[in-house]
Length: 327
DNA sequence: CGTTTTTGACCAGCGC
DNA sequence: GCGCTGGTCAAAAACG
View: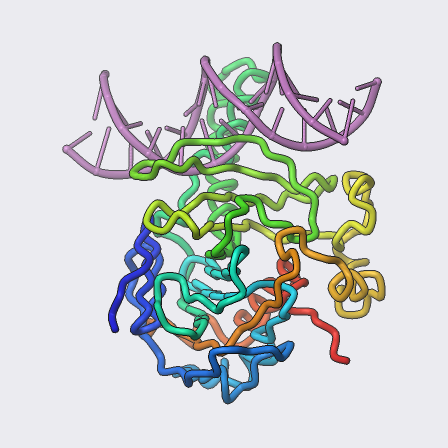
């Protein structure tokens, strides 16, 4: 069956090949091992995951250890994709809010698929291009400054610098099968904008983490091809734990250096006990996952440490998925 | 009354 | 240069 289920603004997903393509870049589709149609365990085993990676640095075992250990409290469907080429992570995790069946997004099979794309070198893709990210700041600077030649020059330098910095911002996209637009992920977000998206009847919403000094942003948009799917894109990483008291989130003063999610009892407790608002009484099941790796991946330039750090980043961004405490 | 959401305006980047 | 698009700002409204 080759029913194509996703092709939204450069997102591409085919159920037959577990193909999840972003920004029209090529992906290879790696074989995966079909799992049971129902998966009640708290994680996927490496055999179920069916990882088959060309890169020795990201072994199936390693990928599994690094994060593809999915909590049933996270979603019914989890589809992560890491775009190393663009410093872009892409994930989709879907859950079915109205049924307990394990509906694949557009797939028609009783299995849920997941994949990770790892590709090298930052930038150039559309998804990684955010011209407007610093537009506001630039505007402010312009308003404050006197517009002199030196100012203009220095602004150019600042702009270039910011642009370069921007390119390195890692981004993670999730595709989530849900009726809820804004999924609860434990962090506190403030909406700062909404825009109509080209070729889509659904608007894109922009959120910022409300914690002070945390500049994590996320965009939420609904797939125009499959309105039941919500695409959530995270940018940057939280430098603080999940706020224990949501009302005090913006006053959290925890620094990145203080923050050790794996050793934080509070954090762990949250992962285990915090109910997801979108989950209702759902049991989240992930039958299996596969990992896709960009064939152009250059190991020399982006070795194990980067992959590891990216997975670590992924884990930090989605602790509820990655840090599930073993019984 | 503090916080969040809404929404129109603005800006930058890009393609033509 | 112009128009389109994505992203952000910020005032007003809504919310709790």
